[in-house]
Image (cartoon, rainbow, N blue to C red; front, top):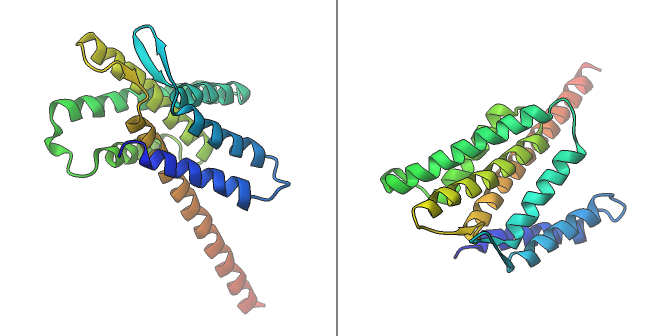
Length: 201
């Protein structure tokens, strides 16, 4: 069912930030509000220039640019370039899926999410926030471009369906899993180093 992973992912995020994050954490309220608003807006569709835009898609797009503007620095241009690379790659993948779906041997949503995840890992090897922002903005810009091209041929005019929101959450989920593995590796390495130092002492 379209949207199932999207709702599961956001509800898990809201539960985690509301009940499991420390109450004195400065990001707790903002993250909880973000997850809840994303869920609420998902049932809102906004007509615009002959297209129908999903409320959550608009919300994520705006929040992405707000965050980008708030972190303006010398790496801003690089992030724009990488998000453009993601945009073009996203469109290329979808057009290839459209004209030759035979090669889709796995779940197409997970394949695209994994492809964009791998791409952002290549262009950003050391910054999780930049990787996620570049990937999310690139995917959303790619979705807008793809639907604009399809509309010229008389196809779908809906931007940001639950199918797309699922892919965005799958991409985010892969990043969180990777971040968790990085943290686990750091904990194991730290514990091993302490053990070795203990033997030497």
